Length: 483
Length: 94
Image 1 (cartoon, rainbow over the protein chains, first blue to last red):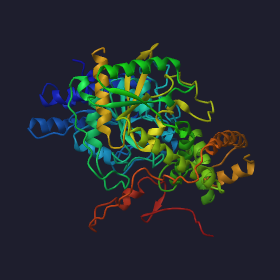
Image 2 (cartoon, chains in turn blue, orange; image 1 turned 180 degrees about the vertical axis):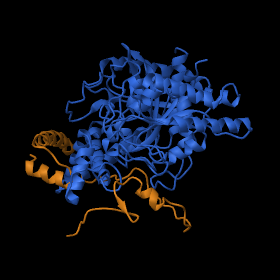
Image 3 (cartoon, one colour; image 1 turned 90 degrees about the vertical axis):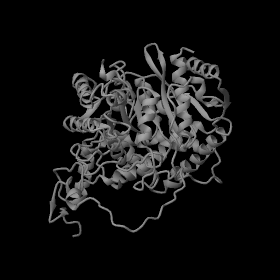
Image 4 (cartoon, rainbow over the protein chains, first blue to last red; image 1 turned 90 degrees about the horizontal axis):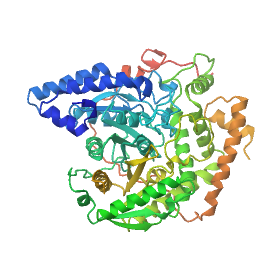
C-alpha cells in the first residue's frame, strides 16, 4: 500500500480500523516531501517534529479508545498567509521572513481540534499578489503535472503539494481566483466557499471584502471533508456568516442523484476572445455530460461581466493599499538597518521588504483612494459591483449553479509572463466575479488537452455551497463512469 | 496623464522609495491602467448604490466578560527593539 496515494477519507478510515497508524501516515508524507520538494518548492516551512508529535497523540487516543475528530491523522498543508502559533508565517515575502505568530488562526485551531496534522506551510505569490506563484521571495513553485509549467497562483504551493501527494489536503486563500486557478492548473479540486462561511481570523489579508479561506483535495469528497471542518461562525471575524450552513452530503451515490432537478446555467458571456478555442469544445462535452445525468442546462446572461476585471482592479488595490500600511518595520516584520529618523525607518523598511508586484499594487491603490480620485475610480467600482451582484441574483432565478471554465487559458510555462506588465491579468477573468459577488465556487479537474490539465468552475449562490459540492460530485462520478 | 510629481507624492504617502527608473515605469503603467478604467463610463452608474460589503453586518452583542488575550511578552515577540515592556522607537516629536 502506498500511503501517500490514499485519499484523506481512506486515511482516516484505515487509522480508525487500526490498519495503519497516524505516525506511519505522517512519516510517509514527510518522506515524500523530503524526496521531491527540493525540486517542487511547494513548501516554505516543514513542521516535522510537531507533526510527528501530533500524530503520536492521535495514535494514543485511538489506542485508548477515545473519540477522534473528523480529520484524525490526516496531514494538512497550510498556505503561508495563515498564522500557526509559534511557526514562521512569511506570506512568501522578505517582509515577514522571520515572523513568528503568537496565536493560531481560527481555521488552524479548528483543524487541530479535529485531530488534523499540520505538516507545514506552503509557498505562494508574495502576499497572495499574483496568479503564477512566481513572485514568492522563496522562489517559484513548479507544477507537478509538468515542471516547466506554472502551478497557478497565488495558492500554487498548496495546489502543487496536493497534486504531488505531499499531502492529501491543504488550505489556500482566494481573493480573485487564487484557489480555483491553481487547482485547475494542477489538476486538483479547489473550493472557494461563500464569503463569510469560513473565518478569516488569523489570515493575513489581501482585500478584506473579497478574501476567502478555502480548501484543496484530490477529489470532491476530500475537499468537502475539510471544508466542513473549518466552516462556521467565529466571533473573532465580524464578516462571518452567523447562521449554520449545511454541508453534509452522501458519498458514492449515483452521479445523477446529485443533480436531480438541478438547473445549470451557462453564461453566454464566457465565449470571449481570450478564451482558448480548445476550451470551447471542452465546455460542450461538459454540458453534454450534465444533460446525460438528467440536469437541465439553460443559457443565462451576466451583462456586466466585461467590467469585472476593472472593478476588481480598483477595489482590490484600494484595499491592499490600506492593508499593507500595517507593515511599518516597528511592531513586526522587516526592519531596515539604515535610518536616522522615523520616516526613513518606514520608507527603507518597506522598500527593502516588499517585492515589485506588492509595491505596484500599493502605489496604484493609494492613487485610487487619494487626490480626489476616490469618486472617479473607487466609487464607480463600488457601484459597478452592485450591478455585478445583481446580474448573479437574476441569473440564479433561472438556475441553481453556473458553469464556466476555471481559467480562459491552459497552464503556461514558468517565466513566460513573469516580467511582462499586463494591464489586466485575464487568467482569472471567470473567477473574479465570484469574489465580487461573495458567491461560492469550485474548480474541478475535467481531463487534459494536449497534456495540459483543464479545470471546470462550478459556481453556487451565496451559502448554497452544498449545491456546488453536489454538482461537483455528479461531475466527478460522471467522468469516472465515462459518460 | 499622471505626472512624476504625482507619483512622488503617492510614493511618499505610502512610504515607499522609488528609483528614477521605477518612477518612469509607474507613470507608464498608471497611464495604461487609468485608460482602461475609462470603460466605467460606458455604464450609467449615477443611480446605482455602491456595494461596500456583500454581507449585511449584524454585530452580535455579548456579555462583558474578560477573556484571555495575548500577553505583553507575546505582543513584543516580533519586534526588533523593545524596552521596559514597550516597543522602542526613535523620538517622533521634536
